[in-house]
Image (cartoon, rainbow, N blue to C red; front, side, top):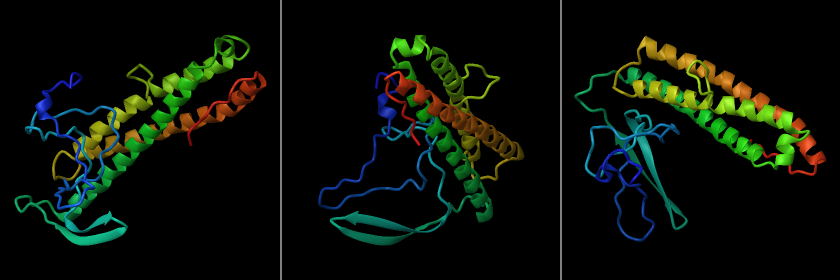
Length: 232
């Protein structure tokens, strides 16, 4: 609570379906899973003890779904129909296009977050190496890889792309797409395509960095030091 910028009574607590016997109620918010955006905050439109952190997942389209509950080794299913708010006249095909772009952006945010997590883990291993490795004969190789990872994680300059900066940029475009039941604007579509292209460049740089770990691992093992671990 002390880390929040809003009163704690705003906050929606985690919703977990109980496993104990008996009748329980669980309400689906009609959204897909939340994207792993680094920057998340509570909106000013607070609901007492029920304000979720944004961004939330994309809205599901109106249509027929199936609820599946597995408990005690048995699976139970029931149909579920989601209907459009009758006050909203947006055509179904427009909503479908909006959802497609939103899920595309969520997938991009997930790729970014995954690469960021792995890059940070690899850099932590480099920084945990003994001084003999960081300052001795292996020093130039270790420092070169560390510098490459540092720039990839957070360039520290607005003019240069980094995984942290790109995560925020993709999340802002995603929020623009999900902001209303309307077709995404041309500018939003153009921004989404541009950021996805730039993310592909960053992911290519991450791939090059991981390729350089193989050569460094050989040097570390020759020096009697443990090899680096790169998550795949």
